[in-house]
Amino acid sequence: MSVRAFGKALFRLGGIEVSRWSTAPKHTLLGLRWFPIRSVVDVGANEGQFAKWISTIFPLAQIYAFEPLPGPYAKLKAWTESRRPNATLFNVALGERATETVMNLHVNHTPSSSLLSATNTQDTLYPNSQKRSTLVVKQETLDDALDSLQPPPEPDLLVKMDVQGYEDRVIMGGQRTLSRTRACILEVILDELYVGQARFSNLVSSLGGLGLMYAGNLEQSYAGDGHVVFIDAVFVRPHLPSSPEESAS
Image 1 (tube, rainbow, N blue to C red):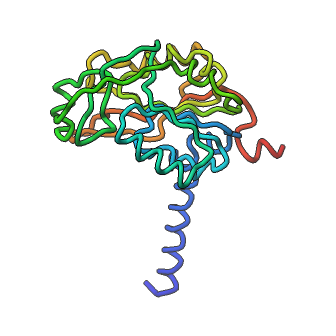
Image 2: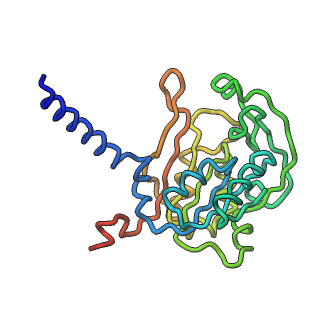
Image 3: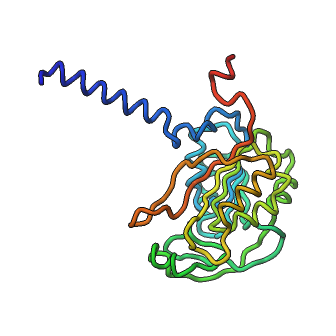
């Protein structure tokens, strides 16, 4: 193959890769990228991994982040103070009612910490989560936490939940908030990793009752044998326009 022919072939392959990325879920957020998101509610923020990423997509959005663990919360606070002063932080867990509760801290992997107990399946799939301790944390409801703010979060709202099987309880305590939410991103566990964890079918039903329809997955994580362990599911309130082309028409 000549240098010229090789260059043309490489250009075509590059074009294919660019085309694939332009429609990849992590790039488009399954259409969410084009929504006029002005407030991001990050439930289970940990050290701010999601908040940092979503800030590159919606840089002007106000962030409301919830993280009950002291260590990750301190790192989240340090980041917001230096990079995102338009962020409001809550050092609490969220659930179906206001209370104090015991949280299971996964010492070597804090993102997998949960208000639910881990199962043997989790120990097998993720042995680095086996070192654990417990601590008492304050729990509030999503509705009460956001309703107390002045001014309240501006629409359109994007809510993300990464609460290790506790999604159904957060939804129970966030009915008013979720009923006015434009889109929701949930990490949903399919394997039995936590005792009493929320089921995907129940989450689809609960959010559907609030007008949020399942729209696909941003990502999914696999076990060594290839089966899906958990997904990052997107739920959207049907509303147009949802793309630059539609907005211009």
